[in-house]
Image 1 (cartoon, rainbow over the protein chains, first blue to last red):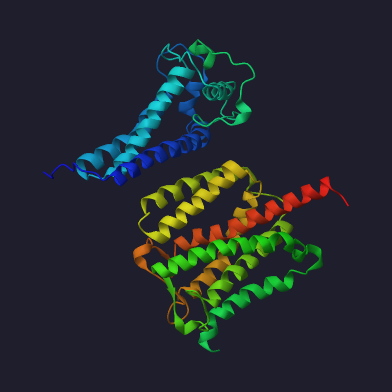
Image 2 (tube, chains in turn orange, cyan; image 1 turned 60 degrees about the vertical axis):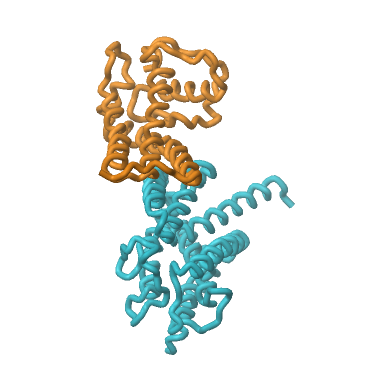
Length: 171
Length: 238
């Protein structure tokens, strides 16, 4: 067995942190194209369940979460156990962080699949939430807008923000 | 023909035909010079600095058999001229095609095309960052495309992709010759340690995206200048 790599230079730690942040931001872009062109495109058959009002706890759309976790699991497994590479591990962590952000923001805060909400909300967080409400104002493959999650342009700034408490209101 | 003037001839021939057609009255390209020439100059400054650095680092270099022997820092005169002649020819082609093809056929797909290019260029660019030509070219082109799509939000990318598709034909001929197709040795050689070693004939695949950026920057500047100029003239008629 290879000896454990225990020492890292400060510059390496900085570089790895930068890679984590860059990957996290880049993944918003990946999520945005996939959402706009794949989920509202070829794989609408899966995503449709997420734009339909229903009472089930799981929806077919949850398969996407499984698929999107594969790159992170694969990278983290391969570059820790098989071929140690801290830069690739940083990429895996960046993707994982985006997935965690997505779970908390999208599934919990917006869609209320768990009944929890932050009591103090910044203006920007309200804008992000509002943008996704607008995305869900249509139940069709075409004609939707606001495909991003982390990045919400200024035009989605709500005039008066009301938090939706029921999951069915957000579907 | 003396082979020492080969590179000079390539520049001259690429430039002269578009130049002569620049005064065709029905689509007079010379009327756009006030936007196009500053755009080409600004672009040339960026590419010349980049070129000087890459030449010193040995990413690429020039074969003395095919150049006149006049140098500006590390760059042969012909290489300096390249960044004026080729963008001029390409911008001419872009504007000529806009005149000839009325419909903006790729407009509905421009965002998807740009998104896929940004995605692939940034991933491959980051992965091959140690190969300087690949890493820097892919990252720079990917980031510039992202700037256009997300920040500048220009409306010309559909037309750009059509023009770039057409320009790939002269690109393959000119870059083919420069990298040694049809002649004994390359005019410009590339250090294979710094690229992907994937060649289209003799042309390194990175050249396609290098060429794309070399067109995209002057077109963006020139379109922006034209837009600003028209806006300014509308507000202040004299």
